[in-house]
Length: 72
Image (cartoon, rainbow, N blue to C red; front, side, top):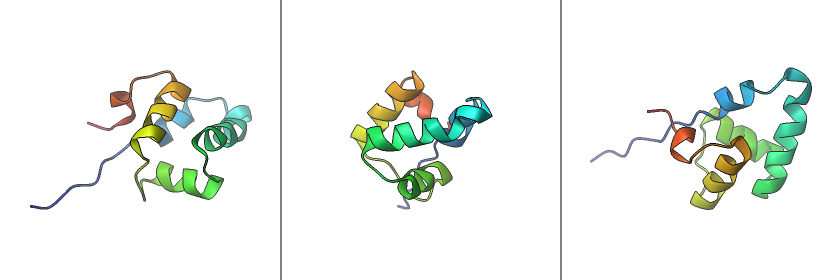
């Protein structure tokens, strides 16, 4: 049985921020997640999956549920 990779809405959620605060918000989320900007960019591009704890932090950051982070 082949395991399909989860798809996330991170790019869409970040796109909702005004362009002048985009980088500030990315830096703040990376700090909260305990990762560098390159790792956050990999999450956004869907190249790797965040941990469950990181998903909870992202949901709090974006003020949504963890389920809302996924593309369905």
